[in-house]
Length: 125
Image (cartoon, rainbow, N blue to C red; front, side, top):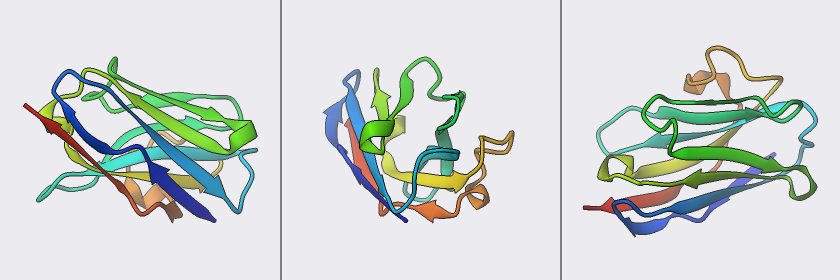
């Protein structure tokens, strides 16, 4: 299983970015795919997740209403559309995956078996 993130970069506050996560080595038939982030000196934070079987989504309170997660089965790719970005969103963003539907504890890093290498998002004020 391999997860490869792309789309990070530098953006001004209020701007938008879309992250992509290309998955290989498994099908999207029944997986939870999500995004975590880690800012310098802080713990990893669950940002969002989506269930591949029914499209169920969930978001951290800090990003709800600003971020949207989606997936394209044909491309085996998950996207994270990030709008109204804030300096506090600055972090390395990681794509994650685990078999089965999203759990109530989706925001804990130990729930995920597979991690990408991360992509840097920097939001300037």
